[in-house]
Length: 235
Image 1 (cartoon, rainbow, N blue to C red):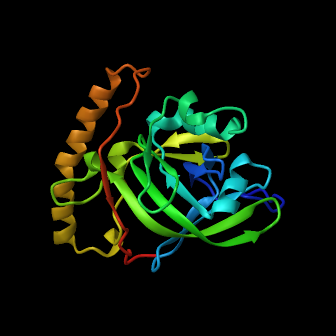
Image 2 (cartoon, rainbow, N blue to C red; image 1 turned 90 degrees about the horizontal axis):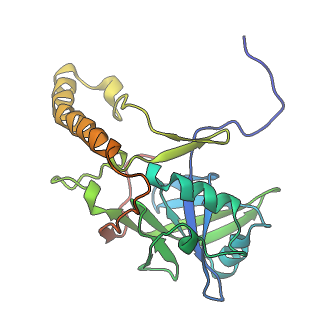
């Protein structure tokens, strides 16, 4: 039996990202956003929705650019902090001991600790009510080379990304399948599972190593792989 509720936002879980901005005064800021997602493949486009009362709103409204920085378990504290403290009062990069690097296409600082940085240029601003939606074109994507294998495939799961659901942050669970697995032929499926086996063993080793690491230790400044994002065949 299900309970009927009044209309509300129940589309969870959602990515919890750190959006970086730079105002006309040159001040960099980080804003935590969960109202975000992909809206188009070609050209690649994303959106974020921000309340007008937020400090970062004015910077995005005036400059027309921002960057989306994906978050990880190591960034969980910073992700929450940047959502409950205002950039009017302090430098969030400094307060969270985070590092900056310049973007290629826009005048905004990227978050070095993020496994993926997405440079965005606003194409449309829509006032919807409580939030303003910024529709934006992706100008460039930067990926941490630590998660790129010898076949040039990117494995975001190794960075341990986080999601947001009903006021709580969660890590991702176990892998359940890949795109197209429901119609994959048995022989091909068996080969894919065989290829996945060493990856699972490596993850177990990473977990054991991670348990012995001091959680208070500052994260390293990762290497970055940069370039314009190619269109995906899936929408």
